[in-house]
Image 1 (cartoon, rainbow, N blue to C red):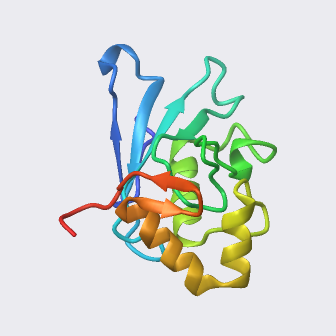
Image 2: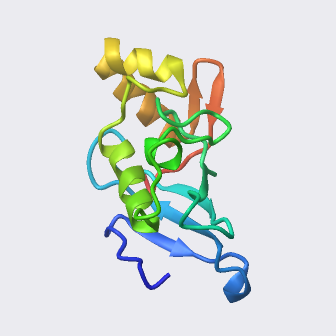
Image 3: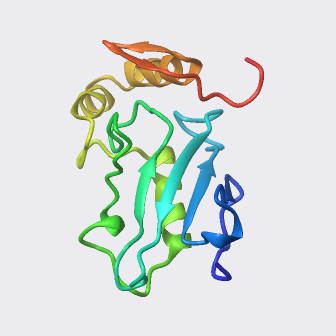
Length: 150
């Protein structure tokens, strides 16, 4: 963990204490873009053969996002085919940050969100705000994930 130099928009926690340093959570709070004001928790499970295998990363926060499905699976190329042993936890956190500042409609896990982002960015922004405030987007309910008292 000495490699960590996380962006200011993220924090790390070890819910199972110092006995389980290979399982931790990273919370992202984007400071720009569609997801400004939101707080998103990701779980990391680092395999015994790390860095030769990428950590398993899931989003615990239900989020309306083209690259994160409703089960929390994350579409980030460096977690799959582009993983290399020279990459590290920092790289992943910066990649996750980028997903929130620049969501990608070309490699989606949530096809509906990607289509709205591509075809109607204003509606996408409305949907993101509604989801983060705690509400329905289509038939899916999203629990509130806004930071602060709005």
